[in-house]
Length: 295
Image 1 (cartoon, helix red, strand yellow):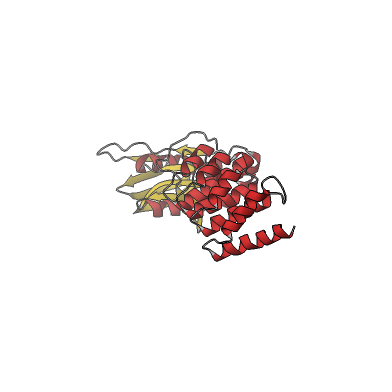
Image 2 (spheres, rainbow, N blue to C red):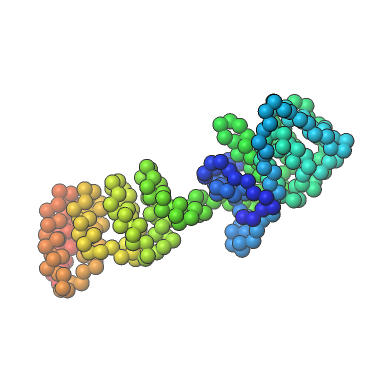
């Protein structure tokens, strides 16, 4: 998303909780979610980003606007405002509090009248912005950023899971995650993106130490038409997981024409698996063997 200015979030995959919905931020993107229209049209969404400056040691300042006062001191917010535009007020709060505030231009132009004296910053912002849609990001119990939209604009925002915005290189790196769930998500995403050309990623996942990852990799590969060699499938019929052995068996049997050049090899494989330690694998192999012999 293009914005007037950019700031870099120091964390990856920031979660923003608002109205019970989890939103995932793209690193380097100051806008937590995109509007439905922007998602489909690719149109940029305007926003003003006020990046919090680095704090100066031992200093604390207040700012006065015409007929108004903005003061942040020790995490407490004081405001005396009578019709001031909201944009400059937010800029002053961001500068004093070191909290990054992102607002739509329509928000900045709004006049605001409010008087607060020494209230916690997060509560003060909620009061100041009560007529807006706001998404807050906190880390370690401390407010870090807020994204401010006109009332009702928040309903046009949709959650964006990491696999939707992460680059293919990011997803490929996720294949090395210590979490089997994340590795499964990675192979699903890579196959969905690359289709039949995802062979290298699939072959890597088929060597994973976790049986669930191997099974899911084989499943999505076969469903997406990714070529898995006969040799690889045969190796998988020796897999420690009965589910992987059964799926590999089905792939071999369905991919080998009855009476074809590799029929004898397939019959031998079926006979071996008809004596498999797992009852389901034995049953599948016996049924396939009977069917092929009948033909």
